[in-house]
Amino acid sequence: MTQTALALTDQAARTSGDGTPTRAAARRGRRLATGTGAIAIAAVAVTATGGVAHADEQYTVRSGDTVSHIASKHGTSVAAVRTANGLDARAFIREGQTLTIPTSGTTAPAAATPAASGGSHTVASGETVSGIAKRYGTTVAAVTAANGLDARAFIRVGQTLTIPGAGAAPAAATPAAPAPAAGGSHTVASGETVSAIAKRYGTTVAAVTAANGLDARAFIRVGQTLTVPGAAAPATAAPAPAGTTLVGNTFLGRTYAPSVVASANANKATLLAMGVPSKADMQAKVAATARAMGVDPALAQAIAFQESGFNHTSVSPANAIGTMQVIPSSGEWASQLVGRDLNLIDPDDNVVAGVAILRQLVKSSPDLPTAIASYYQGSGSVKRNGMFSDTRRYVANIQTHMARY
Image (cartoon, rainbow, N blue to C red; front, top):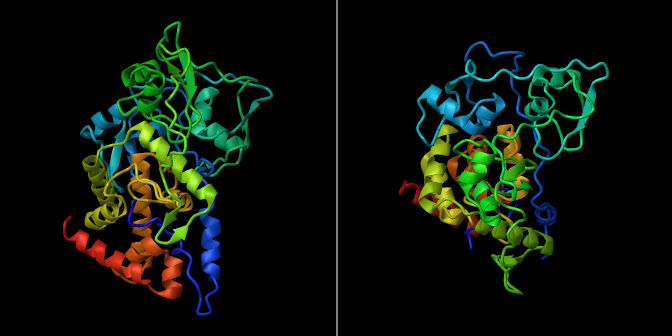
């Protein structure tokens, strides 16, 4: 069980002087009743060029960016970006850093077929403007212009887009590698990884990455259809014994709603099944991400240690997820802070979410103890009520842990 189950919501239900629950506690209860559904996907904004790319591009790293995210935006690979910028295997980047994006050696996109009437596309979970444009053989610039999108090209699930130069059906995707006759396909769900999918179908990560043309980081997105070589049907996972509960329903004397606890148990099961980085690797991710996002690495590591002990499989009864123990509603806020959708199940995104929240709290709080308290108790509650006794202990623990890092 983690030290805290909250991360950016108000403290567990409190009572007023006459013993009645506070309105803040009631509001918090409603917020905690949310599940794990991700917010509508925000498409990456890219500068598209028609025809053959003529020269390498320059890109300035923004808050929350990763090399895989940048490579995807620009239609190149992680390996190419790493090589062009002399990055090591971990591909760490920092906000404000200028990267060279290799484009001159890329394959020219297929020319869009002029269409008298154009076409339309309904946005599905996980889709981006760049991915849709590529699928229909058009450009990001053409799609954004046809739909009146701004420079960031935000789209939402269920939105109907006009696709200029597109026929009634999207261009058929060319498989990166032929699948064996007995192979199958799999549509990526939230929280899934290539390693978990490979294990489920009784194949290997190398086979799945090769069959789908994935780079060394094996980045996949929700809604993506993968070719699974050598798999006719998914392997059946052994069900948990009847009555098994991975996450209880109480923490610090508070009992959480069944829907919240059910989501917590589902997330816990997903994390256990997918396989996560070691505690040492998670600690390294926290420190590196904090440095890249301008947050004191000692503070970020102290928070992660107190919250989860760097154990990414940690999930609390309040559905606080992973290393940084972020609940879904706080994850949505973090996504808004960094300008892209964050998947709290994903180790990298979980750390980005927690560090983004910390950075905002440090900026908006009068002092460091208040920022730390707000991560645990919620900034609104701290402003209204001051620090509760358990919050003061939490702050003291964090400041003690900071000396270790």
